[in-house]
Amino acid sequence: MPDRDAHLRWRELSRRSIASSVIFDVVAAQRVSSNGRAGEFWILDARDWVNVVPVVYGADGSRRVLMVRQYRHGADLITTEFPAGVVEKGEDPAAAAARELREETGHRAGRLTLISDLRPNPAFMTNRCYTFLAEDLVRVSQLSLDELESLEPVELAEADLDARAGRGELVNAMTMVALFAWQRHRPGGLKPST
Image 1 (cartoon, rainbow, N blue to C red):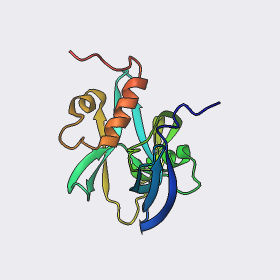
Image 2 (image 1 turned 120 degrees about the vertical axis):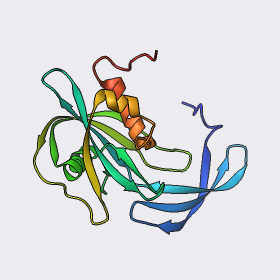
Image 3 (image 1 turned 30 degrees about the vertical axis):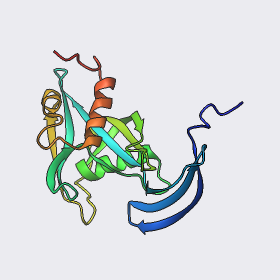
């Protein structure tokens, strides 16, 4: 069967390493299009990420989410985000989600459900971002943070989270993607705007 997208694909001629770090490598790829245009493209060869949306259900049917407040070096500000992190080499994304939830909140989920599998920025990044819904939470330990990690768990009511999304400390784009995935997945789905 012919490739109907062959006219859109670029063929890689070569690649070279520019820089390497703990969470990503920078490579320069020489590529050529189907009509002969050639160029060099810098690519972040990044490890996959996970987001975890930990939901606490109240006896009255209310929903609250566990989040973390932390300083972000790139933006030089404090953000409120869902627990998140990189998938270790050879680690299953669900295992990474369970690990990040435990490390950053001290909780274990009785149930983890994949609700989103996206590419953060396919223009120049190779990785995926998996979002998991964590339910039936049980506190099992203290926080277990990396040496250079400092954060503070917080619990927000569902309505407060929805109202604050995209403002103040709730500005991390991957957190907004996770929130959108949960809004689509939760009972009642997305609420129509008024």
